[in-house]
Image (cartoon, rainbow, N blue to C red; front, side, top):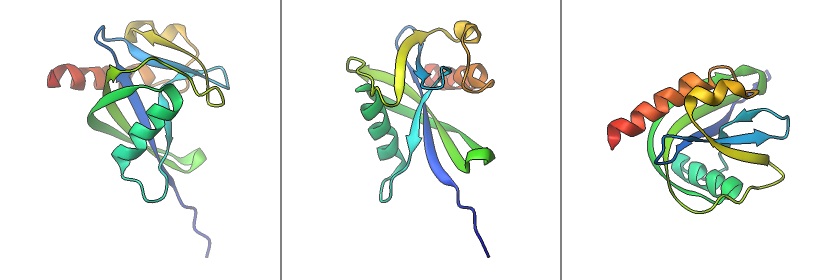
Length: 133
């Protein structure tokens, strides 16, 4: 019997004080959120902070996990987190990310998106962040 196992991944919806979300240009020329896989022995919050630090050099406050999405074509379970920028200057991990912008949600559809529900998910994340403040 063969088993197809799913990988646990995190996705970070990071917002600054101007309600702009950190938008990353991936190597496939689509724009999306920061994310990555969980390593053996890690807690999920450790994964989130490690991936954010590795890919952007930023520190964030993790406000809440608000979404779980199954991505069948890549055998992944993606946990979405609403995050608030805390400190740091963006330094990109060039093997992973080509560029970045801080973008208002209403401007997201001007970009080639990694996945079509990104503006809807970003709206949920921002509502959670603004409710917590």
